[in-house]
Length: 205
Length: 205
DNA sequence: TTACGATCTTTACGGCGTCAAGATAAATTT
DNA sequence: AAATTTATCTTGACGCCGTAAAGATCGTAA
Image (cartoon, rainbow over all chains, first blue to last red; front, side, top):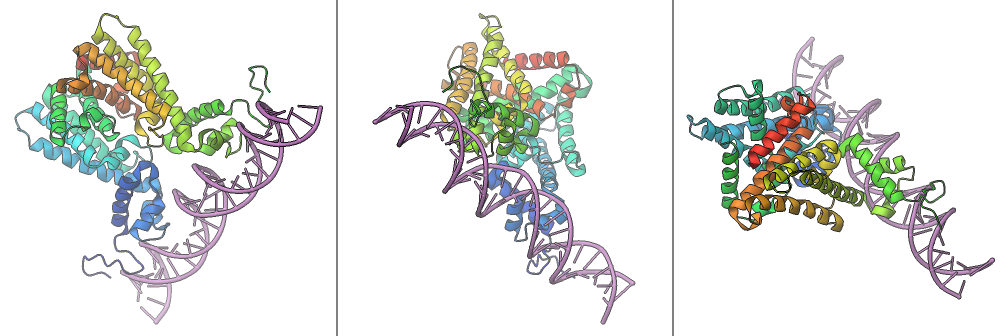
């Protein structure tokens, strides 16, 4: 039995293969892209046999669902951090900050973002993933609600505001990731972020 | 040699296998999704051997590139039709119509749209695909330019308008396709389209 | 010490994309 | 019309993939 917290990966047993596989999966996803991702590649990267992941995640959907869940949890942290850095009394500024956090996460974790929003390989019925995704959605609803003064889901105008907010932010994130907004990405990073801030705050304002 | 235009698919040769494979690919893409798509499935659906597609398209990227090119050509037709149905003198109304055509195409051809905007399986350097995608982009630029009065790509404010227009429309399309805007999609189809029109015209207005 | 369950490996299967070689049909040349 | 060339499609093989089953090894508890 292990008495310390060290990895000790030398034996027949790995130590924390589940964690290692999640990390390997994220790297594989980033390097090979969501299309070139393979379970066997993750196993090889983690230094185990190709069938080892099955015991911890069942199948590839299980591994990707767990990774997507982690993605949404980190996503929520990113947007929350941005929001809390804004003026607590300015609901609109906080919502804009959240939107910019949304885009920041996408740009910092392109493969993960694409797994979370553009893939059907993960099982979004899985408990932890469902919960994490819902939590992020509820943060968005609350953010729009703080600006509107009502629960956006209860009124038609609220739903329109909610959809517009989400769409402008998600559209920017997705188009930037797919390298299709060259006219913005050809600029310097500072200019790009200025533009993003200007666009988001204009639509949400 | 064939003297008539009939298919005559009974012989060793197919007649128009290239066309048949493209149609099979679109159906396979729609049924199995972009992730479950296989070249062998297309061949089986077209009634030929698994290696037959290679001669016409080289590899799977070749087939999907050709299909994506067709997608962009149809996409341009859809947005153009919507634009030309709007008041020719109202540049803003025409741009809004184009945006609604963008979303209409995505909802009518979800698998194709995802191939065109969310996949790396197609080769966007391929000539015809590159041309078709560029033509669609230029239509967008022209539409925004008609509203702004300048070429949007030449000024910073123009680029911001361009990005905002594209992002709101693309964001709505992508989120609708990923089934994540239930609060809009739970409504009737008429109400949904009213909402889309309201959102797009608000952001572009 | 022994038994047991958890963890990982090995082996095997069918399906995939792709390549090479062969067969057949169509077109071209003679 | 016959022969030859070219285009089209099939067959068979290869390595990689995901997954299932069975065997090996380890940690733990009786």
